[in-house]
Image (cartoon, rainbow, N blue to C red; front, side, top):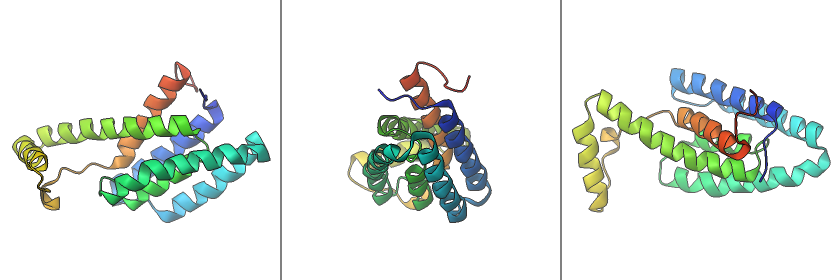
Amino acid sequence: MAILGGTKTLLVAALLVAAIVTDLRTRRVPNRLLLAAFGFFLVIGVALDGVSGLWPMVAALTAGVVCAMPLYLIRAVGAGDVKLIFVISLLTPWDILMTSVVASLAWGALLGVSKALFSKQGLMLVSNLKGILQGRAPAQATMVQIPFTVALFFGFLTATSLHSGGWTWL
């Protein structure tokens, strides 16, 4: 079981918070932010773990592709969210990354249902779920959408907590 170090946890959490802020403001995760973070995380990863740390980065990046691409293909997440998952994979071991993505899906569902109920769209949600179970895709305009960056942040916190037995930065 891999444990994510405190420095790496803080850096990934900081990137996720920056992504949340921009996502809430613009409904996008800017490529400039992701590209800068990718380069920075690559340098930090090598500085902390040495060149031998590149293989775990490749393993985590592969896990990120395996997790994120199907979500993108079914339009559960946007391209910015997929790129964000790729970037955080550089400092996150593959097992914590996989747990983060799964936990993010649970958080996303919880946040989506909460938003639907608070915005009085509960009946539309039930109707969409019924249609999905009957094999019909709901119209995109009727879908309750949340910024997945928020769910990804909560998923990351959940995963680091589960894998370390507590918050690594406290």
